[in-house]
Length: 163
Length: 163
Image (spheres, rainbow over the protein chains, first blue to last red):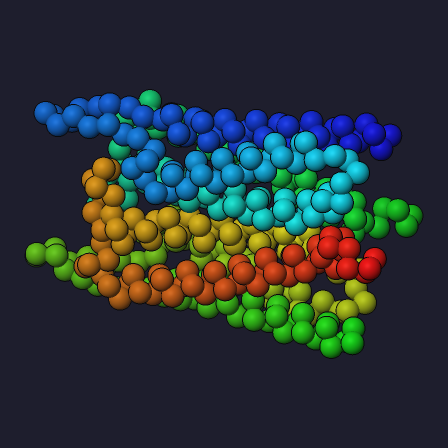
């Protein structure tokens, strides 16, 4: 039973690793050339600090995700994994929120600030950013579930074992 | 000893409550009238979805923060507080990251997307947003510390009690 559960948890972590890795790769490869009137320009993730932060954060969480998978089950480091999970989930959450806020301005613009939407000119670029954000969200949900599971198991907040 | 520690934790929570409340209030009251050439306009937090989200998130965390303070120490709900802390810290983190990403564009602009900085026109508004972000960050750091403390106490990840 405990072994099945451990395997399930490792599979879930593998999924989270795949999600963060795809998020980083999809965002990092997003670019599109477009021309407006006579000016031609290229949209790239590296032009937006929030997207750069997204790529770096997802890359860091991916490295952590793969390292945890190869941690021997008898390692004492597993006791630190909950704390690490918390820190890296925060990093992931923060990078997704920042990238989403910027992507929203890119899609809808902000008339008050005079910022025009750019997705009309570079639809393929915007689609790729959207894909990266979705992959990031999947990873975030998995890490949140892992954290809540850890809290539930250790703290038994619903007092299920007492009944 | 346990009583002193409990009192210290409540004081820290009071500080976090004060920080989220000030963040919400400072952001919600931020506005400035300015005129560019002959056009006069007003900058307000409600014109930016990310800032609205920041106010709402900080207000929600403030309500949670004050409710926790009045939770009787013998209440069984205390066992759920770690899980609640996690969820509300995530909310806070996400709102601060989104607001910071937008504030950064407001300050520096983004030449590639053609978004001009607006802080030159409305410096007082930008200053107030900055203040709200700093208050939010203080609250975030406190909640992160509370979470890491909870993980440390319950999981004893550094094995301090074993030695």
